[in-house]
Length: 288
Image 1 (cartoon, rainbow, N blue to C red):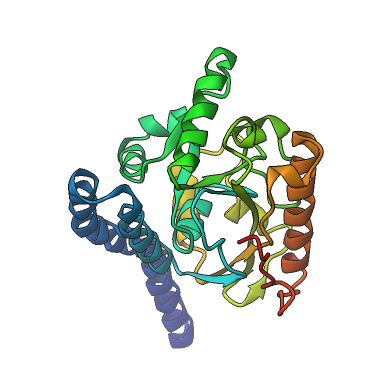
Image 2: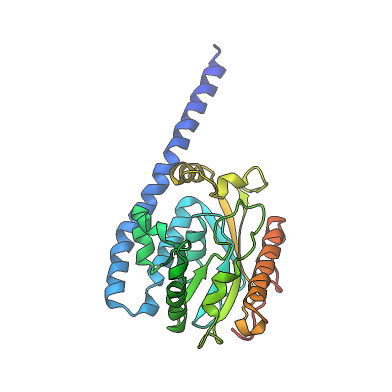
């Protein structure tokens, strides 16, 4: 074995060792942030007004994104008022810190998340609204909980695909999930479509072969996927906030859902092609 071969093998072993340490290093940074911010959020829930509660989770999400190597770019602006329902496409768990780093609000999540140990505890601290999608008898009560949060001036983040996609396209939006903006005292609620896209990894445009490393789908366990994700490197994420609308702008709930899905899907295709929104993408409805 030549000296050059030996040096090459040593470099490879050192690189492999660094790669193995990446998840632990990133988790340590997230854990340190949680050790400081979780007690602060507990205190805020006890003593601060509800309107001030989202600030600490937003800071935590920013630190999570930074620790994971995710650079989040926002296009457009969130509606400048209270009582806003953000409806976004969904690729997986990473959407939570990405959206949470730029939007102040509470997420709507499936009830199982509450049982996910530390993740479930953190979700409760952010006033997450849990839904039992398979229990039709409780659907009315769950809709009322979301609508009441909006009536109190809250901002709610909903994934109306009803599941996470594989990242190749935006799935149809379930019109039933838009029932939260039906009924009395909901005419003034704003619904703002939001596109989430992960476009580059280490400066390289994301293609179909890379999407399984970003999207969390199927029967893949969270732990292995999380470890794989943390080894990817630098990730570029985009959030495109489209013009908000009202339920009364559409003849039916189905038409509202179809409009939001079409806007989000078009934004996703454009972002994945590398077409970043300009002045038109930042357009903001006067209703906001």
